[in-house]
Length: 428
Image (cartoon, rainbow, N blue to C red; front, side, top):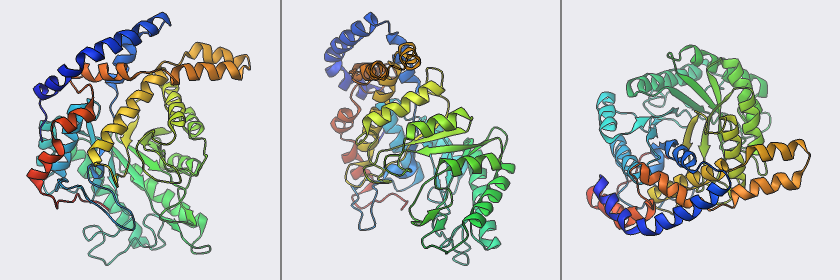
């Protein structure tokens, strides 16, 4: 459904009185602390995070899938849903497609549709972790034992051809990045050679890097396990860095919050990759046990705050120009409601991290005063910044309370009427 400015304005009008009082109270307190409130609001309003095309549909597990109905049946309808979400949040201005799940018959028509909806295309994602008739010559070749790491050169060649086709599609759509996540690895000890698998992937990524159009970059994404449970070729940030360095200057590392073993110091990983100029992208989600793809900030909010603090440090006081995307799976929640909640949490955490007194923190660190350093961080983390986030959305013409607006406008009910109760989005 299309959400109009008038609809949002009508809902905002009923919330505006409380919002203005809350904003005035927070602004007064922050002004006394020397915070430039307008600069913080402006940075929140500037930030945007991509919604992946596959996330507007219901996720699933190995045991079942329970669609909510009204799910997008085509890539164009996925873009419509993201446009509706962006109208509510003001912070989801881009879409990240997954190919071949989102392989359009008419790329020019899809781009025109996205342009009309006010949505642009972020990084393109290539899929060689499952066999698809359009990319595996109708089953003649299989990625069962890997793609870019496969010992058979014909399999590697086909995987490379698919990635090049994804780049070509991205050029037509106006994208400028390719994300390569591989399921390649081993389930059993001795199944393959660690070294030869890695060398084959490195060689293939080098070939892809040579094929990148001008101004494009390639992102390599690490993950310690799943679906390969004994070893993954690109298992950690060190492996990712080695692959990026081997591939070329325009290869960067992508950090997914769920792609780390429990208790990994992810903020340190972010710092290391940023320090050597290879941090290129970020996938936001949260986890309790592994790659759970839960709502952003729902399990480890303080860790997320520290990660965003490192990103802002890398950006010199603002969020750096990286590829940001929400990568979550919505098994029980309405998928758009979950994406709205994730976007809101990212905005809230961004606002908190912007409030860190960097000078005071640096002084405490240089004085070896861990208690004071903790106080500086906690002062920002414990601040109620929700009025600042709501104001940033209002200035962007979006909803003060996006989830409230989504429900009051009856968005899911409208989708059910238009698309039916049995519609299921493409993807896993």
